[in-house]
Length: 249
Image 1 (spheres, rainbow, N blue to C red):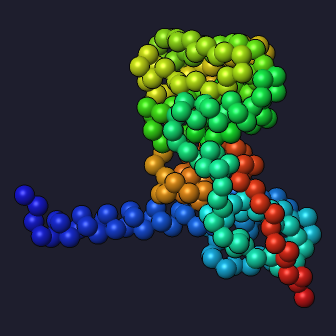
Image 2 (cartoon, rainbow, N blue to C red):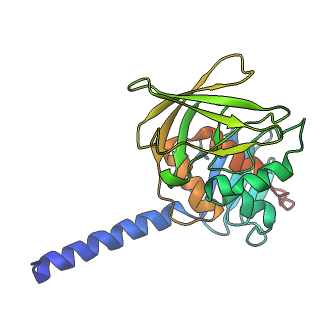
Image 3 (cartoon, helix red, strand yellow):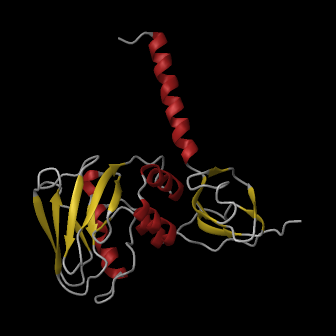
């Protein structure tokens, strides 16, 4: 049985962790270039209502619940957007529903010309290697960019060489990952050989638990684990035009 002192200490620890998770959400820098890049590194949290004084050549991309905005210098530019981003496109982008999103993927990707990037941040892109963040191993899905013809992806676990093949019909972009044959877990590495690809790619799994399911919470989780391919999907899929900046004096 826990003593009152131990329970108090445990409660304090939980509150501290909750506060830390909350601090990750908000407005964060997701891309940064130009003379002021060192002042606004990727992952930096910005206060609500903040204004950035940017120099010529500065391009700072920020993300929060309002979406992704590109801020350019010179001048003083407001960080805050104009309200929470909404819409079916954003819902499809963030939904962690596994292969059940395949209907959306097929609709957005007509036969003969798939989108240049994945329509969902949680899909494993069969054409790109690197760290792959997953929030629920059982909902893992694999996506291919070109669905013009039928094809397949051969998945091989590096630790023991065990393989499984995922088949795609013509016009089909998304399939469930064979989790019973090849379970995914923290640190697992898989080689993916996609039909028609010049070479295979390797992905390394990183399990995440976003502070919330909104843009800012998901982005913070992806940045923390270095899931750069998924950040590209998130940034490009949630862009909105930034309001005009204020000229600096």
